Length: 116
Image 1 (cartoon, rainbow, N blue to C red):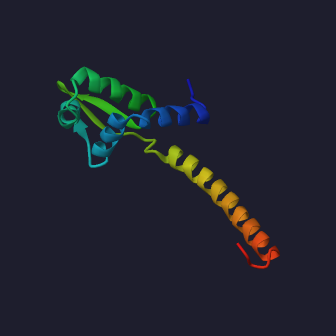
Image 2 (cartoon, rainbow, N blue to C red):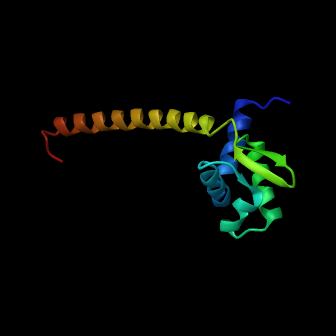
Image 3 (cartoon, helix red, strand yellow):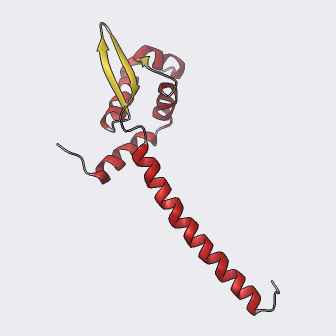
């Protein structure tokens, strides 16, 4: 089943909403790690960590592979590109609105003769 762009973005935003998952992504940004390596500094059980990893996998932010008895994790193909594009789009919109507001306020200030 192919996910729509909106569904994919929703999954990514939901995934990064949790601080534990953001810490997992931060760690994986430094390179691949096993489930136990990820769990250790978070002081979380392996089953608990796996739940977080599955959510990150569903959003294509993390990939895992079985390597013997160890499950290795690494950043997935999405790598937050879609989220970054969405944030950038909204940043541009708000900058434009704020620029128009600033122009409006400057115009009103000049109409009052420069008085605040």
